[in-house]
Amino acid sequence: MFDLTGKTALITGASGGIGGEIAKALHAAGATVGLSGTRTEPLEALAAELGERAHVLPCNLSDAEAVNALPKQAIEAMGGIDILVNNAGITRDNIFMRMSEDEWASVLEVNLTSTFRLCKGVLRGMMKARWGRIINISSIVGATGNPGQGNYAAAKAGMVGMSKSLAYEVATRGITVNAIAPGFIQTAMTDKLNDDQKGAILGQIPSGRMGTPEEIAAAVLYLASAEAGYVTGTTLHVNGGMAML
Amino acid sequence: MSDIADRVKKIVVEHLSVEEEKVADNASFIDDLGADSLDTVELVMAFEEEFGIEIPDDAAETIQTFGDAVKFITEAS
Image (cartoon, rainbow over all chains, first blue to last red; front, side):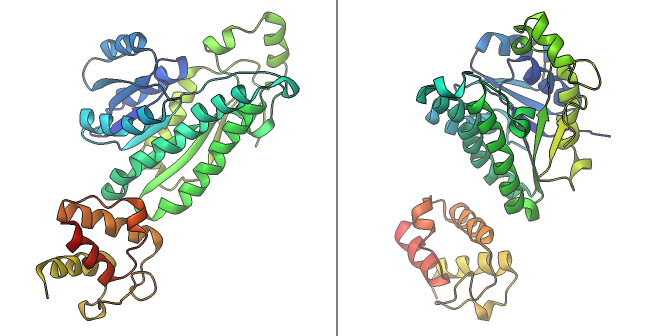
């Protein structure tokens, strides 16, 4: 089950905790992976760890030109893109009344607009191949909201609406578009929380623990597989029951 | 009929599964030949490949009929 031999996958944010695990899971299933991110060093380290079938494709997602060039670079390196995982994201938290135009715009640009650009850039090849998988990593806060994250929640909710619209358009071509909404996952981002904050969060999670990057990667692997061909336009919530949507 | 028109017609017939006779000069891909908007995108992609040309999005939007396509490609190639 879930054999990706011969498939090629482009993963953004592969230098981060969740993105790295996604790359490992797809690679372990047989896919050739394109590792994208802003920091080259961790990407190189991950590629070295994976060995064959791994390509490093650095890209700054706030640079429109670089984003538009990324699919072409990935196709040159891997011969195509069968699977796109839009995982990269940034946060610039602030309460709404203090949030600057720049904090708003930069989060929308990197989290939502770059996702739009990358989806657009991979569609041509997927349409011709009559096969494609687009997996957009949203967030629980896109569905529930979160104080201090008006910009991030807007971008993550935007990804869901965008995924559904695109899913409609390309469904007849064998291309599925889905979102995954992680809850609280152990990463460098959540390590910054203090014990009180962590305790308060854990109290809201029925399973009583944070999720692991591997658990997000497993959801990506499923949606990327041939077996998930009839699943499109959905949001898979992976949150330990924190929000049952 | 020109060589370009023949090749364009072949693509249209194959892609939209329509009878060759229906592909007249003024036949609209969407209104007469049953294409949806995604089909028209794919037709343009197929034209680009067949003729080795690039058809920008704003030009692609003006290609509504078989005649439009032949005219554009003749001028571009």
